[in-house]
Length: 323
Image 1 (cartoon, rainbow, N blue to C red):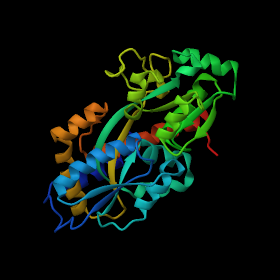
Image 2 (cartoon, one colour):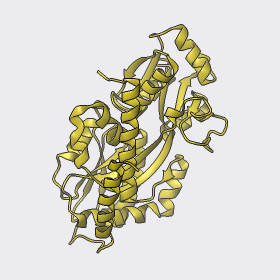
Image 3 (tube, rainbow, N blue to C red):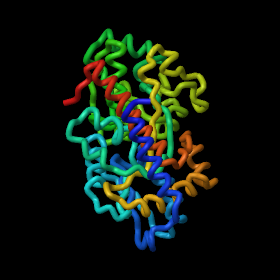
Image 4 (cartoon, helix red, strand yellow):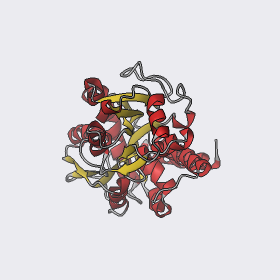
């Protein structure tokens, strides 16, 4: 375990003692709670946040509303939460893009280290897809097309600095291919660009792409899980494709502004654990091929730290930069 992870574990162990105390912080919450989703509606971050918000509304007995604030690969909405009052009424539904990728690509993202982890909510692997129009049915076939026509085929992402942008950069660096990166406002816009033939490749966690894969509008090429995904049993993993650097699982979790009190964090963590145990939430997540998170504050913090270390190493080794 690295020094960074040791510090994370010690910090979260101390927080765990606080979380074992009274579940409620005074009368919090007394009004509606907003969960900021820093991407457009319909994407993986958005749909998972809405399932969680509905469950939390019932548990906290206050409205929990989702506010989409897309832009800059998720950095605009994330900064909004990082600069909000630490009163528990403005929260972030964070993802690997916002919490682990942005800090290693953008030097000005140091404010992310001050956000307070509340609960790990969901996990899901990424899937690389192409459109039927390319004629490619395997990753190797699409990469052959890209090598034959460098800087011609387009690679769509949810925005510069998003997880799917970085995974695409890793793919190109590892395979010696050159796609043209085209950033969109979110994964749904990127997905539609691939379906329409404006782009030939994208990657995203499975949920927002599954229906289009099943209908044949998108062709799955590779999943990034350690083992094949039950929803796509015929699609090879990154390791099977000879790309171990791309064995990366996406994660989503609830974050609070800096200096949020341990009592409010404890209330939210207890509510999240109850929400994640509910049959309704589990059924909704299963339908979208999400794995239900543990609800652990410590596990979320460790995933963030490990993600930053891993992405940072890959960015450094492969000299990946963004403009």
